[in-house]
Structures are given as C-alpha cells and as structure tokens.
Image (cartoon, rainbow, N blue to C red; front, side, top):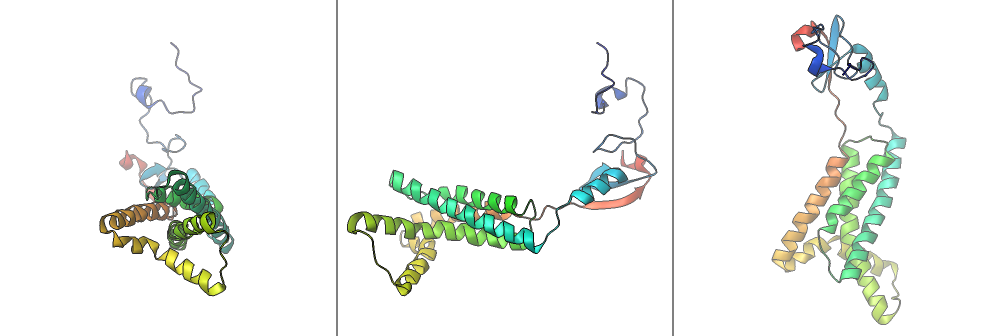
Length: 216
C-alpha cells in the first residue's frame, strides 16, 4: 500500500524506516524546529505556534467576570430547581445531587467567562454551589407548606430568617450525625468540582531555548 504523503499528521511510526531525518519537530504543528524552540507545559513547540497560543489565551477582565457571575447565578438557580425537583419527585433529599449542582455551576461560570478562570471565579463558584444546595431546603419546605396550608404570608424579617436557616441547613443536619456528616462530605465534593472547573488555565511557556536537538 502506498504511503499517504499528504497526511498532516507526522508519520513517527515510519519515519525511522523511511530513512528520514531525525531532526526534532514541533509537537503542535509537526514542523522541523529551527535554531530555537519553546516548551509549553513541557511540550516542545516552535516559535510560530507559541505566538499563536499567546494570541488565543483568554484575557481576564471585569466584563468576563461579570458574565461568569451572571451565568453562574443562572446555573445555581438551575441546580436548585434540579435539587428541589428530585427531592419532591422521589420524596428523598439525596446529597449526591450536590455533585450535579457543583458541575452545573462550574460549567456555567466557565461558559460565561469564555474559559477564563482564577481565584475570584473559584470563590464565586463555591458560594453559588453552597447557596444552591442549602437554599433548596427552604424551597422544599415552602412547597410542602403551600401544598398543605395554602400560600404562606411572610414579611421581610421572616423571609430573611428563612434564608439564614436555609444557609445553615447543611450543618443543622448534623443533628443526625451520620446522615449530616455524609451530606457535608458530598457537598464538599460538589463544591470541589465547581472549584476545579473554574481554576485558571495554567499555560507555562519556557523559552526561547537553544539547541532543540537536546530536547529529543
């Protein structure tokens, strides 16, 4: 079978047998390196690809953060609705839904910020995930009360009290120690998911470096 010489993928498996030069190449575009090269997260890269990577890196800005927060709030509301709907449909408040909430919030912030991440995005993701999960207890209680006694009437003080009770609900569950501890652990894992999804995308560029042959 004839070799496909038009393939853009370097034929590493056949290069040695074809007697081609073993000159080091860029691991991004496959071109032979010149007199200098870079390493991007440990990967040998040519100067042209490094320039393109730098141009494509998302820049953090106030607008990106605001978009991330808006999308994150929407994701938190979606997660809260998911948590409440699951609890009302099954009659069970299963903490594993917290994992889905963390993912939804983290993904929403990442989409809103167009891939930008960092500590302030992570803090926002943690707060929104915790609020979505904890306040679901308030939504469930209000729904159950409404179903039994009709629409409740609340003043601002009463509503504020309910919000505070909701925010404390994951720790109030510790009255049943085993159930409460398991719930907190699962909530922590959900928060951890959101935290990792909104971390800064680390791109470590080293160079220019001479003698690309030394890099193999």
